[in-house]
Length: 294
Image 1 (cartoon, rainbow, N blue to C red):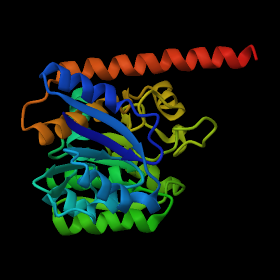
Image 2: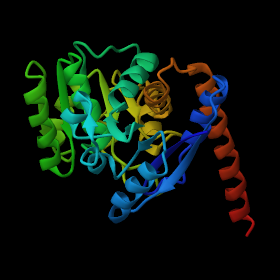
Image 3: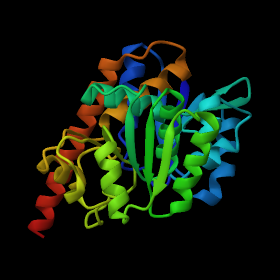
């Protein structure tokens, strides 16, 4: 029985176990996939435990992607360039780090909007691990332009420097999302906006930017799956929209293939994901009804 896991802080909300479990069952692979919540100070101890206990691999989510890259025996070129690891393969006592965020986002954008990466123009809101990995991957795949808006401008500028090093053909720029002139200009140029901040995970959080700035022709993808107020506002503006489930599916598909060395059963994994999301919606509806009657 092979053991896999997702490491994060927090991680209890994830539906990855249902998605990956559906993939393992479809191919008759005896494997488990569990959620492991690990605080940043405990990451070293957790990695040592997973290595010692023979876990075959694991996924990594916020806030550990950058730190995980520093704990690998080897890192593939895309993950090294982005300094971000979201998939770990454990073989022969060695840990090899990969990044599937770029693959997953590219597949989701192509599937949702018919937009390809080569020659494409993209605007990222946020410069965290997933945004950095995806934007660097897009640049390496031939994107023509990548704009990055982030409240901490230094983090966005760091991504721009990485892109300049690994893909000098790609035009890249950074600015703060409250710079309305820069934001409007970037939105006018972009084919697709990727909402890559953590805003939207919790009720009452502010929008990552003013939706009134959105042109109705701009495709908008939110990395948060399940729908957010920002995505709803973009839809009201007439924008084509998609939530993060496509990215989650396809980055998970690529992780599955790295671990197993076999083509992933995409349809089965998609069904597992959709069933898990539907079950979560039903549970939330029951909880909300209970709160109203409390």
